[in-house]
Image (tube, rainbow, N blue to C red; front, side):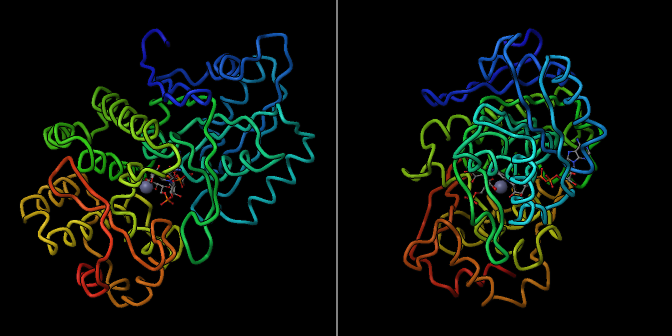
Length: 370
Ligand SMILES: NC(=O)c1ccc[n+]([C@@H]2O[C@H](COP(=O)([O-])OP(=O)(O)OC[C@H]3O[C@@H](n4cnc5c(N)ncnc54)[C@H](O)[C@@H]3O)[C@@H](O)[C@H]2O)c1
Ligand SMILES: O=C(O)C(=O)C[C@@H](O)[C@H](O)[C@H](O)COP(=O)(O)O
Ligand SMILES: [Zn+2]
């Protein structure tokens, strides 16, 4: 346990790991990595750090220095910032770098960045030599509260979001909330969408707490941020512990808003709409669908709209998407929850509780776009 911060344990038997949450402890990554990999000082350590062009200078260089100080042989590889890097070309360029680095099965892949770097580097770690140890150092709010935890890794197919991927749990996650000080406003707000998602799917009290702390959320108040990150990680760790591979159905609740969101992201061109923005709009589409099925009323929709708008997230489907109902339905057929052409949606029946529902007719799905 870090003395001033907080640890959240992801309890997965032999694949269990800690999320170490604190402010300003990024320079301890060298010793933490040695602990998590069970590689005491004196034993060799090879680290392959993946980052992006916006994160290299403010944060990945600190990680490199700390790992070098801890005696590691370090290579840093920097990909272009943005969703377009979650692709086949970047994946194979990272494999080439690993070959050149003479990586072996004990070489650790360390992702320093947002969800793009985490998903891409995690997929490379899952597949190179059939699996390398992996450490997550998330530097966006979205990555701290969601993508760095739970082991979903992957890249996009031009037609379908995250279509190529693997489950590969990290050995540990270091969340230094001070790294958020350099995060642009739009990216910060994108992360708040996944935070609000947790309130809707699992925790009505947390949703109400978010409603009561809008100023703190907008001002990035350190205490508010600490609670947001810790509570989100606890909720995600609980879901992942219960249903690591999304087989029982529980983990699918983390997909609330995502059936619509992933279609919007793919069809508008990856990166135009940020993931969290697409999720915000998708949650409102999902709630309208829930209302049309008689599962919730206007109040539950309005509370979500108000909270999302209060933190400056979009809630309306962009015009260009409203013009493409057939493409959206086709894209949804590629969603990983779809079985035998039956689209599945995670729908609320109150704030704090959702269920996965199938057998929904296409007209109802499309009607919620406007
Ligand atoms: N694996 C999962 O469980 C999971 C969960 C949610 C989302 N995701 C995926 O995560 C991705 C979105 O992640 P994201 O929102 O972190 O986007 P991102 O990784 O593109 O990061 C957002 C932007 O912020 C920059 N950045 C990152 N940290 C910074 C910092 N501290 N200071 C300055 N700039 C910084 C990045 O360079 C980028 O331009 C999507 O691809 C989504 O599908 C995965
Ligand atoms: O961890 C999960 O499980 C999630 O669904 C979290 C989502 O926020 C995330 O966007 C995830 O990548 C979506 O997964 P996918 O399997 O629908 O691609
Ligand atoms: Zn998501």
